[in-house]
Image 1 (cartoon, rainbow, N blue to C red):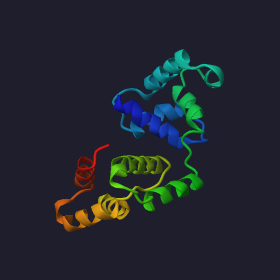
Image 2 (image 1 turned 90 degrees about the vertical axis):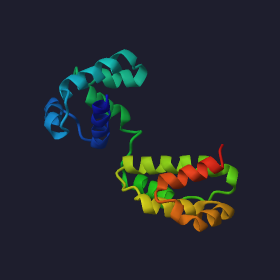
Image 3 (image 1 turned 120 degrees about the vertical axis):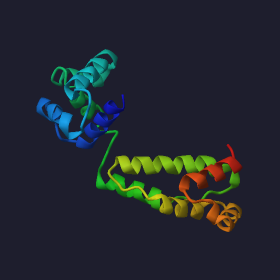
Image 4 (image 1 turned 60 degrees about the horizontal axis):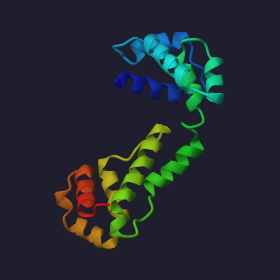
Length: 172
């Protein structure tokens, strides 16, 4: 199944560029897939055929038979924007996150911020590296926790270690 995820991410990146049968055939070598991209596209088409209704079903009906990747592209066009404006908005949320007001809000604030990072990457932005993630996180923590973290800075070699420590200290 991971290959299908890779395929769908590729599709979502196409935005306004139609996906033809030739494009799908070319994916086999381009993405180095073990399974046939044509067969997977057909399976996506069949699955969507059985599950779509309303306008989404109309989109499916108006697309070439078995071209599930093109149907998916059309369906996700409005929900996976990769515009410069969207990236700018997400960039600000990733690289200038809102300060966390209190200790009780730490865990969920980290979850929300990590969601923005994922959306930013999906929109074509470059996510912060591990060191930058640590700096950004420490910078938004409540002052009392910031001070505690800074005194123990050498205990947190990675962003994961830092988030694990802050989340376990202050559970939801």
